[in-house]
Image (cartoon, rainbow, N blue to C red):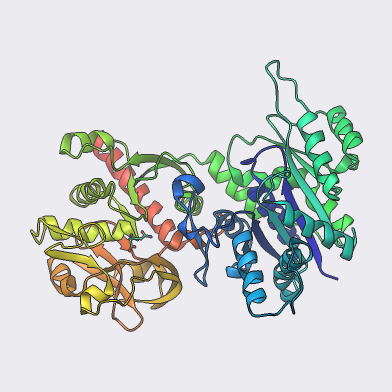
Length: 544
Ligand code: GLN
């Protein structure tokens, strides 16, 4: 029988449901079980591709090019679950599919309704991942908060699945909030109400993950158990972690979350191995050396907008046994004269410019790329961060002061980054996005080839514009070298600065596949280079 664990949320959003679900997944994997993770999102958007990073955080991209909610990024960092289009389900998709079938006449003239048609489709989509993959456990995170109008069809589908498959096969985990009031007292009332609401829909939670500022005293856990009809050992204290989110699996494990889930699901409880997570926490909290990386972008105010990049940098630190401190710099607000740049980047050991869309803040990024190149500070450009390297080089070295991407200046006299169809002059081809996994060929003798140690790699893409082939040779000859290309050599995939200790721009997004226990090689190499740069600077300062 296939086993499912549903993770719902109560009281309010942003309590860390995604990380909780992913942590549970990682704990089951640490016991040798296979899992799949699914996110269901109650919004009507078909995918997260068109949602603003300001509102929604980063858009996460899967191998097959689905643009999803950033929680899939958490799943990718915490677990080995394969993730594709099938693992991200939204209300928009469900309605689109049901309406399409209705138009095709598949419902044979019946009235099409939320129950059973929408809920059936939700269950089918969930089972298509869980049942068909044959994994031990499928964990489904239900987005939104219990009580939202939008979440209702999903919760109803959960209720039906518990009813159909039985409580020994389907578990309901509910994440809720126990706020502390002014005198520090912890309050259980919002949790009682949230569980009441869940039970009104027909779902009795098996386990409660209680988010609270501090660990819950035992008598409070007993009180919650009594009021919510959840067993005492199922009331788990999800207290605030000060150090790193990667400690969360360990926090849950100490309270037996993974064991309790397996016991309730009538499964064996194999021995766990958490040494990987313990090592990550050890380095992130205890490493002696710190490497300071500036992340320069335009969505800086929102902490989640470059989530995968931020995390991948930390993973690079783990691989080098150093702590990584992130310094966020808003490229739009940056003063671009040399003096101000020196001040802004004092004490920084490496600079990363991440991806982005639209022209706002791009000139600031260009100035930063120039500064990093001239000052020989390790620089890592991702997607837009690589295109910025091209614009900068064309402006300052090739002396095309009006060089730009046609994304920002459509009629630029020197369109060094442009749409493919502009390059070959085929109009109406449609500026479609290049999305998902594709192969790159790493050229011999390049930095990227040394780092990956292989010729062909596969990385995920999410971009529309390309380095113009018309300028490729000029740029190469002037010292902005092509490091890799598409497999057929037709497009540039990465560039590097000649005569620079570490200046690399990649058109793809390596951050999406980095894990704390397995840092992506580019992030590992970047942090190593930044560490070396930092040591040299310290050495210079001592000598001076
Ligand atoms: N805006 C650029 C493009 O579409 C870069 C995209 C990105 O950084 N993800 O090509």
